[in-house]
Image (cartoon, rainbow over all chains, first blue to last red):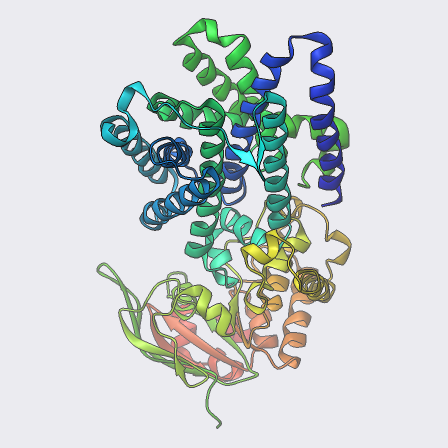
Length: 320
Length: 258
């Protein structure tokens, strides 16, 4: 826990330094934009890491919750003129409802079956976004999504949006770290440790699994709303199966079972995607496949795990 | 005799065509140490799994403190006051020793997701109490100095003690120990029998599945012998050990003279 506070301080410092430092070396706009995406994706990977890394449940459909958040916000504000904040709350509620309906039957499954079920769910949402074109605009996308403002203050520049997105990430990090080091956090970690023993210790395992699934869906939904209001345009292809896989790669690459790992993974993958791999076109997927394979073989605890082991010795590397 | 704390009434469990427990009626008195012995496959662990709700019985009932608990979920049964250890150690390898035992406080504490995540009032106090209680249990089984180590790094004997402490942390009225001495050396087994006696002195009823007969004879008040899911003998250790049917089915001839 104390370790987490130390990392947290460093994390905040880095967040403040980035917008000051980057303009010295590069064109401001581009890198701040990337950092906004990193923040949005971090929000998803933090939740996904709670689900995968701590509770030991996989989801290959989290792009769907991201998409539900983005499209509910986009449709309500862009087409029906809702207040963005009201739309964001409604998006969260709708996503939570869908997550509950999907989670209750799916989380009874284990391992590959859970992966298959969530994957199928992700594909279904993707198809709905494509086909329900009267509402979503279909494959050509949804335009005219307004910017979001904070207490009447327009978030109209990249720098402002950077601060806004990362403030929400910071809040979600605080909530997640608090949760992990608590009764409920131990309960959800016990589920991945040994489900039988967890039950025997009075942990209502189906309920705990649903709760963490809902939390991760909630994070993804908020990320979706933030994405929609930043881009002002969304199309279904952003929320396809590949993006779900990319999220998992972010978590694994950064470090399964570490909140910080999720953020690190989002940073590395987003940067690589934008800077180096975009020229590879469809080979990008192949590259990520190879990365994932190598990671699981050589670095099962991810980049963050490696950093911890190098810096602090094996014993401390365990604490999270 | 007073009302038994735990009772099975014509309890029956089939797995497909195989009968694991057959019409078993038995009673466990409060504060006793009851050993369940029998050859491999006699249904001992199945009986534990039925009592703790891992699976429902095919027929029959289980009563705990006069109430039917048949078919309740394992976490409800833990909450009511029955805890257990496992034959194949089931510790949470992804947590420290102390955290493992802290999970045992789950049914006696309340903080939910929101109170934990937002650190709402009452959280800190409860968290401190959880830690104190868990440390007390660790001290009880003698693992205090290893409390911050990853549980998976400890040797088997210590892992079994973690399980014991974790089960005790739930404040059980009945504790089920599934082969606690398996894999332990003589010294560790000696410590274990002391622990069991101390637990009994706390007023906790102990049910013990065990193959180590010297331990069984030393700690138990009554012994229940199962063979092919049926009760073939029940009574004081001395009586059971001289029962010809028990010797035939399980103990073997040489034990008689031991």
